[in-house]
Length: 119
Image 1: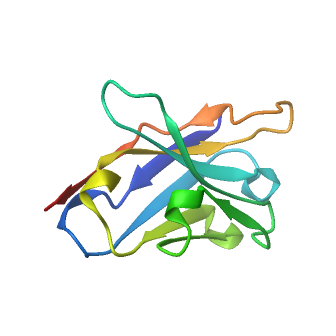
Image 2 (image 1 turned 120 degrees about the horizontal axis):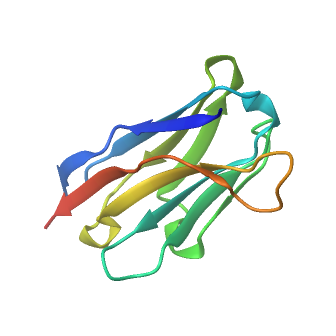
């Protein structure tokens, strides 16, 4: 059974940086395209970024380009979301997701990590 465990969230101030980590336990990490999403209570879940199996290709939500970067270390079964120049509107629960070989969508999810940016 594949499990995703996020960490790195917290309370920061506007302009600060955070790096979220997502460790994948079980399965073959290098075969999973990975992604991050975020959700604010009462709103729909929002796509943040995705990364290919090899890490060579990344794609970001337009509003986040230039502030967020995404990387992965397949040897450590870990994907990282580096968030810079954080803004209050970045406040959300951030979820890591994996796309299994049998799915056309992200079908394995972590429990989420809270990011709060104060003004």
